[in-house]
Image 1 (cartoon, rainbow over the protein chains, first blue to last red):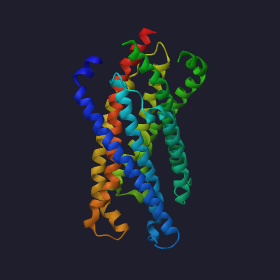
Image 2: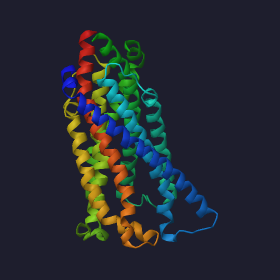
Image 3: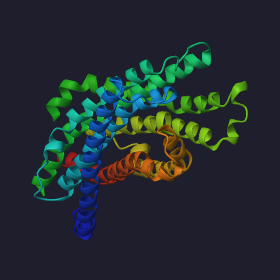
Length: 172
Length: 171
């Protein structure tokens, strides 16, 4: 692997810098979007402006998208720190990487809460009136469960893999 | 780490089995869901609507197929990381390709979403379709983020397997 790193050092550096810039932009935009959505929701709630009735549902779900983007931004920044930690000799894991498992668990919790929010916001979205309806509900439950399991798994792996990389570096 | 594995062996085993079972339900289940989506009298002619087809295809891949494959790969990775005798399975060995393929699919999907939905978004706030460029941001931003994450994960997976292998041989 050392040979690969030596050959591609400039490319990896460029990739990490690009990723970090884009990750920071995404995180800032996500934070700005989250604040804007919250203000927008408060304004509509207190009656200064009303969205058309048919679009109320879409607007009520928009903050979820903004919070998703914040997590994406954090994930990209964590990824950059992980790649740098993996390929650079003297790099120490940053704050996001050190608390990466917590972010994964938080995101898993966010997924569960957002699913509950979505299905309580959209009335009659899932109606188990037929066997197809029951099947769809089951599939959605499985899909959410597997996502939560994936995130928990990522958290567990991240916690264990950092000492392995550290060990590998110290031996080299 | 050995101590952790010994302490949590049963939990890890249970986690891997549960993940694998749900993943194997999701993979064929996604295909059945796709068929059900287009079944029924109200759905006739839905294939003519490109956005509905894209929605169904993207749901099948994003909600069922991709999480299923990732979960199987993750179970293999955990077994490989924590077990001393385990070798990486097929999905883990080709995991990076799965990430890149999904990233490619996301780019194509975003292109079509911009094409179909930006006018609809503009209509929500009563703007003319001229302002549709504004609404490209909610499509493009998450896609750029997802693609970067997927490419990064692919790169990490490619580099991390030799590190684990090296760590095992040294132990």
